Length: 296
Image 1 (cartoon, rainbow, N blue to C red):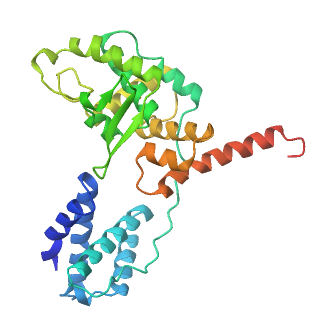
Image 2: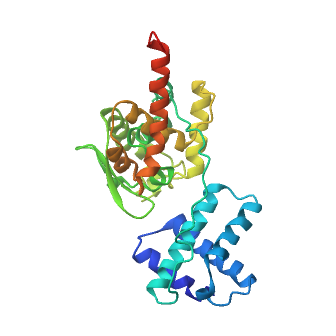
Image 3: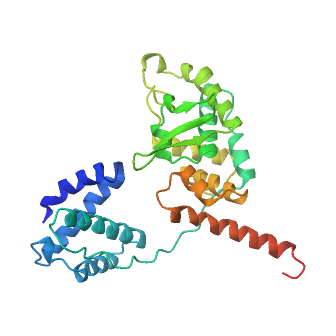
């Protein structure tokens, strides 16, 4: 049953422009479902029905898998059978009309504007401090994913006009504007600090952010950096790259940004992913109403 998996992966790369972790997840999900179907004595993909897909989802749920995981598995199976229909291997998609499980959304974690300002004021004017300030300013100014920060190249920046080109999860590039503070911090880092970082004299890397070996700064390095500055600033909540990205989005919404523009800035494929930030703005409006209206 798994003989079409390699072709499916090529299809996702070529037609869906899928790459990285998403591509690996879709392939793995399709392989796991095929193995489950074989255990149910379904030797041909054309024999698979909607009851088999539901049985698989129930099996995963009984194993303790989250609603988000079940949704992704279902999306992968749908995509796999859509591909099989294109290849005339199957006539119908057994996952097409199955309703996705409801997901209990976690509360969005973000910093207040005051906390962000406090965080950004922590790095000093040393070589390391100039690098870290530029990194923090960029993450908040552009709302980048940590993978986008790690993968950023010097050539992605245009500081004269003020933007950075990001290549998101599906290989699609987007242009994100940069404000004056982030541009100033990046200029100070690139021209004054980056050449002085130990190891750079022997490195020809084009990575925007580098570590003290002259190599590309890693996800783990960024997480440690954020944790250190959060402690230094007295910020008690757990600070992650996603927290800064959330802060960017929430503050944009609170200051009047429309959802479509925010979707483009964040690089979301689906507007629904952007709409989760509306709940924060609505809660804030309700709090303001309750505090200020005489008859609240």
